Image (cartoon, rainbow, N blue to C red; front, side):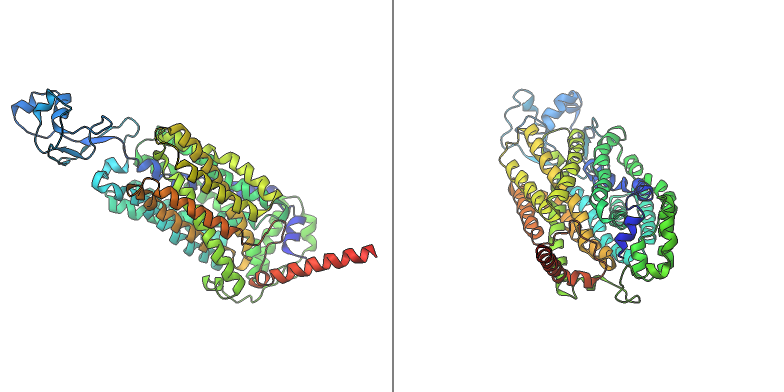
Amino acid sequence: MKFDNVLADLNGFGRFQLRTILLMLTARMTLPLNMMLNNLIAAVPSHRCDITSLNYGDAFRNLSLEERLIVSIPVQEDGTLSSCQMFAEPQYHLLMNSSNMTDLPTVPCQNGWVYDNTSFKSTLATEWDLVCDKRRLNKATATIFFIGVMLGAVVFGYLSDRFGRKRALLVSYMTTTVFGFASAFSSSFAMFAAMRFFAGFGLSGISIITIVLCIEWVDIKHRTAVGCLISLDWSIFSAVLPVVAYFVNDWRYLVATVTSPLCLAIICWWWLPESARWLISNGKVESAHFYLTKCAKVNSREQFMADLKPEILSKVIIVENENRKYSYLDLMRTPRMRRLALLTGIVWFAVASTYYGISLNIDGFGVNIYLTQFIYGTIEIPAKAFIYFSVKKIGRRLSQTGSLVLTGLCLFCNMFIPQDKGSIRTAVGALGKMFAEAAFTAVFLYTTELYPTVMRQNGLGYCSFMARIGVAVSPLIILLEEVWGHLPSTIFTLIAFAGGLSASRLTETRNIRLPETIEDVEQTRYRALFLIASKYLNKRYVIK
C-alpha cells in the first residue's frame, strides 16, 4: 500500500481537503494583491514643475496661472508641458508667439512638482518626488520587494522541509503581517523599501507552502483539479485589486487594506492540518495517524482508519533514513536531481520573468491603468480552464512547453503593433498574459509532482528563488526601452522560448504517483522501462 492509496480510500478530495483550501484562502488572496500592488502604489501621474514659489517681480505676479505656465515651462512635441524641465528665466515673448522655443535655456525643476491627482490621491512618486532623475528609484521598489520574495523562497523552503509545513506557514503569516502594516506607516522611502523587502520575504512562504500543503493532501486523481482550483484565487483577486485601488486611492491606506486579510488568516491557521506525507517521511507516524483520522472523520470514512494502525502506516512511505536532514545541497548530489534542478530553475525563471514583464508594464499599452489591470486579471480565468484541460489531456510537459512558446509569440507580435493602437496592443498583451498565467499555473503543479516528498519544499523553494530572480530583473529589463524601444520585448521573447525548450526536456508526470524519496527520482527511468517491459510481457502472455 502506498500513501496515495491511503488518501484515495479516505476520499482524496472530500470535505476535509476543501476545508483546508478554504482555511488558506484569506492568506492566498493577499498574494496577487501584494505582488501586483506596485503597479498602483508606484504609479506616476502627470506632473510639471511647481512654479508657485517663483519670484520674478511684479510683471510675473500679474500674469494669470495659464500665462505663467507659458513663460516658465517648455511645451513638448505632443503639446503637453514638460514634466522635468523649466526655463532658466521667464520667456515673456512666448505670450506673443508660443511656437518659437528654439534654443531657449532650460534647467531641471527647482521647486518640486505639481501632480495630477485625478486618478490617484497619493502614490510613492507623489509622496517622495520619485520622478525625473529619481524615476529609476521608483521602479526599483518592485525589484527590492521581489528580492525579498526571492530570499524568502529559499528560507521558507528549508524551514518547511525541516520543521513542517504548518509551523513555517505561521512564521510567514506573522512576518508578512508585521512588515506589511509597517510599510504602510513608513516615514521615508528607505524605510518603506526595507519594510516591503521583509513583507515580500514573508509572502514567499505563503506562496510556496500553501500550494504544497494542498497538493500533499489530495490523491492522484484530483491533483490536477486542485492545482488549478487553488491558483484560481490569484486570477480573481488580480481582477479585484484595481477595483479596490479605485476606491482606496491613497497608497498608505491601500497597502494596509491588502495586508489586513492576514489577520483573519492567522486565526484560521489553528485549524489547518500538518502534511501527513511530511510527517511520515520524517518518522512522525503517530502525528500522521492523528491527522489522517481527522481526515477520515470529516470525509465520513472512519471505518477505514479503524483498520489502519500506526505501525502499518509507517510502511506506506519507505524512508531512506529517518534521522537524515535534507538541505538544498541534496539538489546537486545525485545526477537526476541535478538535471531536474537545472531544468526547473530555467523554466521558473522564464515563467516568472515573462509573466511579470507583462504584468508590471500595464502603463505601456496606452489604456487606463485600472482598466488594463482589470483586463489582465480577468483574462487569467479562462487561462485556468485552458490549462486544466490541457494538463489532463496532453500532459504536463507539452502544456508547460506550449504555454511558454505562445507567451513568447504574443510578446514578439506586440513589437510590430504601432504605439497609437493602444486597444490592439492591450488585446495582444492580454492574450500573452493569459498564456503566461497558464504557464504559471502549470509550473506549480508540475514542479510539485517532479520533486520527492523529502525535498519537495526545498525544490519548490529553489525554483521560487529562480523565479524571483526573473521577477526582480523584469522592471530593470523594462527600463532598457530607453536604449531601444523593442529591446525589453525581444529579451522577454527569447527568455520564454528558452523556458519552453527546457520544459520539453522534463519528465512527464500525468497520472503518476508522487515520488517520496530521492531514490524514487533517481530510479524513475529504470522503473519506467520495467513497467513498459512488464506490460509487453503480460500482453504476449495473454495472447498466447
